[in-house]
Length: 116
Image (tube, rainbow, N blue to C red; front, side, top):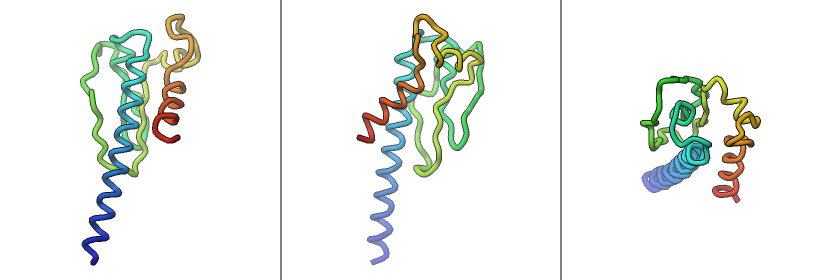
């Protein structure tokens, strides 16, 4: 009987991992797509990381090679962040092309899409 419980728990964990993966990839994709500039250093440096934000920023990076993030631990904290030195200013309306920030808008959209 223990095998049945283990299989059930594995199935639940896989379901949670799939949900977390969907949310993480949705957020990253939406931030990139909604950005004022589809390519460039800011968009290319949107980072997904586990258990702590990744503030790395490479000003020479112009395209993103990480197109899909695979969730390995469904119970970890996942972060979508930007290490751009001007990211906080952009989030608070610094750009005329994107007068309101992206991260807060996308976080609220993800809550509406996945949790309501």
